[in-house]
Length: 473
Ligand code: BGC
Image (tube, rainbow, N blue to C red; front, side, top):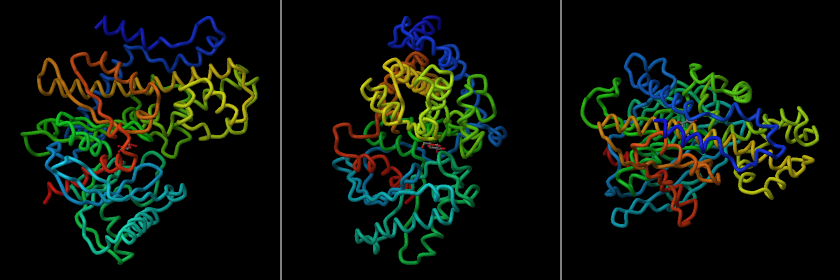
């Protein structure tokens, strides 16, 4: 352990900035974000306990980490095939896809797809409006692709915490990320979709399978790599699923085999157990969010919130006359205008930083630009290390479950933060190696890196919803 701690300390606290330069004066603003290796181990230990609370029959009800059974009992074996429709709701867009899974070529082909934007008002409007919009997009897609007469099975990737009662009965526990539509929490999402389609009355859908995006990611990677037993998303939101021994899922009957559990780790800390590591900026981000008190861990990690944390730190430094000659531009002073993608761009190079600061209407100096890079680096690194602590908890649990001295496993990953940030994935991987030294993890991005295009990637990520339907048949 001391060796692990020492190695962790070296990279957690090292950054490419010379301590003799003026930006060291800002270090005190950033120190609260720098989590020591011991703290990360402590975070992992707390999550380990919370996983147990979520799995327990009597403790589940109040557990912040929900550990939701998905009824997925196996990963794909590469023999699945057929034509499917897939729906994807979870970010700012809604997507409809027509997907073909070819057994022989072990390929997932996207036949066609369509994206419908979900306007902000709709994300905060009524459930009926939202599902009517979804039904309209699906109807338009079927119409324009001559699919209205067919009854294809439909996989619905719905990236919110749901209590799955059956494969086609999924009760929304609560909205997260940018959504807060009335009249949906506590209801069966499949039923709401079917009612909206019924209101239109011009087409029918076949059987529906509900899937969380983490499960979709695990399954799509599992199609290529049989040892993929964890799915992780670090995008607008964050979450992971993994294969748990059924005998440990106390709310489920049965002893044998494994089931995929959607951890909903974004809810970690909702009972206050992470309060000691929250900064004043995290508290502010939570307070001004549409769902205060909910998904505290997610708010320290995911793309929906990272930009805002950086903005709040920059505003405070500017008010304290450490940056931009003490002048806050209108853009910097406006909530949500410092986008998370700026963090990736700024960390990618000083020239990007200068360009973005100019676009934000700031009067910057070279020192300002490098301090902004340091702020971005600190906050994105914290996100990577917290994810690493959480992932280490899962792999260590799988290894203990199987009583193995050494575990070799694959994690399927998706999400813009993981994919787009220049150093996020390497920091996360290095940290997991140190926090889970007896686990050898392969990370598989649920995307074809050779550049077959975003549409193909989307199909690969979501076809698993359809595979579930085949299992049902
Ligand atoms: C949701 C999860 C989802 C994650 C990533 C979270 O806000 O609660 O269900 O997997 O975002 O999209």
